[in-house]
Image (cartoon, rainbow, N blue to C red; front, side):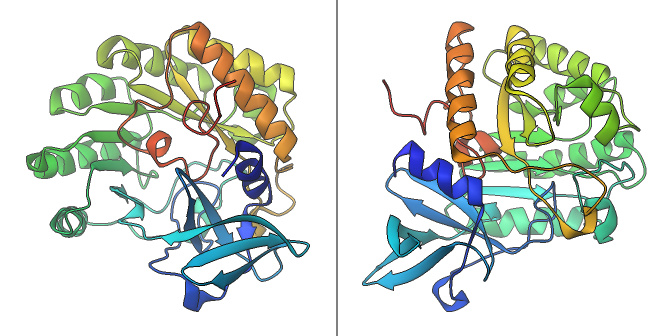
Length: 327
C-alpha cells in the first residue's frame, strides 16, 4: 500500500463493509475516536484502522481471500482484516479508565460515562493476551477518574503485576510531578504524554482546564530519564492550526527529543458545535508527515524503533519512517 493510498484511507477514516467480513473488532474507549466501532485493515507491510460507517465513500468487497477497498468503483487497496489482540494487533493495549474529569473539546470520553476497570480485570485481560502467544508488548493508557496521581498509582500497580511477562511496557497517562521517576523505577520502557496541539491559542480553546507547559516539562524530563527514541506525544491535526504552526510545534518537540505522532482529528457527534474540526486531506497528511520525517532525521530521531503504543501499530497515523517510502 503506497503512502498516498494510506493517506487517503486515513483522510476518509471509515469504510462501508459487511460485519460478517470482520474478525475481532472493538469500540475504542480512549481519545477522539472513542465510541466508534473500528477495525484494522492490512495491505502488505502497512495497516490502517478504519471506523465502520455505512455512509462512507469507501466500500469493501470480498474477492477470494482478500478484501478490496473501492472508491467510486475503483480499487484503492486490497489486503486482509487484521485481528486485534487488545485494542490493536500484537499488543495488550489497555485503557484503565474510560472516563475523564478534563473536558478537551475534541474528545467524547468525558461524555461517554465509561467504566473504571479494576486491577484484577486489567491483569486478567493481559494474562489472556499473553496466553495467546501473540503479545509482543504491553501498553497502558488512561483517562482521569479522580486525579492524575490516582491514575499513576493504578498504572504502577498494574505494571508490578504484569512485568513478569518480560515484554516491553509503554505508558500513556497524564503527567504528574513524579510520574517519570516512578515509572522509570517500575521498569517502564517508553513514555507518551499527549500534547494534543502545539498551537497555544488553540490549546487554550480546546483544553482550557489544562496547561501545556507542564506537559512539555514532563516530556523534556522523560527524555532525560528514558533516553532517545523512547518518548512520544500525540499531536492532533485538524483543529484549525496552520501548517506553519505544525512545523513550529514539531521542531519544538524534536528539539527536546520527543517524537510527535500526527493524529488526524476525528469528529464526534457528542462534541458537535463545541469545537472546530476539519479532518486533514490526504495531501495535507502527506505534506506534514514528510515535514515530520525531515525534522526527525535532522535531530536523529526515529519513529520506527518504538516497541509500544501507537508508533509500532501505525493504524491511526502515517508513520514518517515505516510508512513513507525512501526517496
